Length: 289
Image (cartoon, rainbow, N blue to C red; front, side):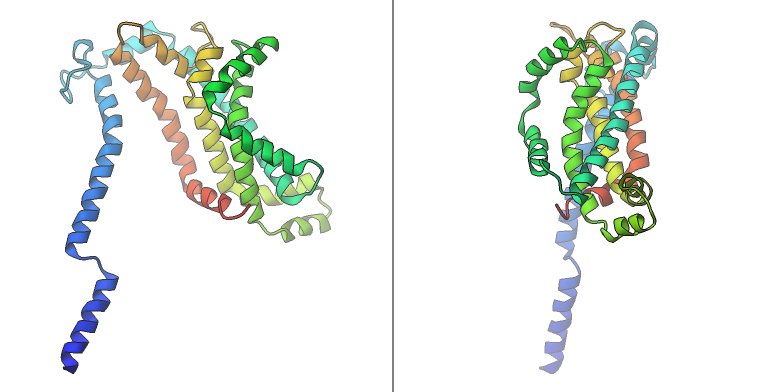
């Protein structure tokens, strides 16, 4: 009886520490299916960009691979102009978005001042409005300011999207940094901004990485505002340029998928450099505040 009881206890202990073969197979099968679902659209776009024009929408994975779509994109379109416009808009949006969100989050986290709570509520409420209902009022406002068809107008618009979310996230992140660090900076004679710049920001790299990534993706991949506010090949960003491949009756799938592949490369590079900070930054920003 004692031997049987010890065997049962050992089996129960092993069961709590290890999955059954059936559960392990089910888990791995689920992960495999999820991976295929995630990777398949990207792979299909890449393969379509390598197909000849007459096979672009065929179900063949690859047939007569060619770089003709990429040559057409470079030689017959204003792709590099669109690319330069997007780099300008996304770069400035990222830099300003990180700076404004970081300074706002730090001020709200460390100081108490009149209007602080209304400010944070305003930043929160702006996130509740769907983008579609803001296009018309923002279009009218940009028109009155003479900022339509100007990169500055698009940058300001993207900052209104990125900064409220990022400021809330940075506040939560700064709340996790001990206030004693600020006090030591003041003892050493640093100004509040000097303390923020020299002591706090180096500790906030994960949060800054998330803020930068969100601001960059917001400006790099946004379509609605870019299409409404910018016209003409010399002013379009990549998002607006993609729409030139689609008409009322047809779509030029080959160059459009080739452009999609090239557009994804900078975002992927940005993610590679920021990814080691992303999880830590998002987790820290969600723990307090």
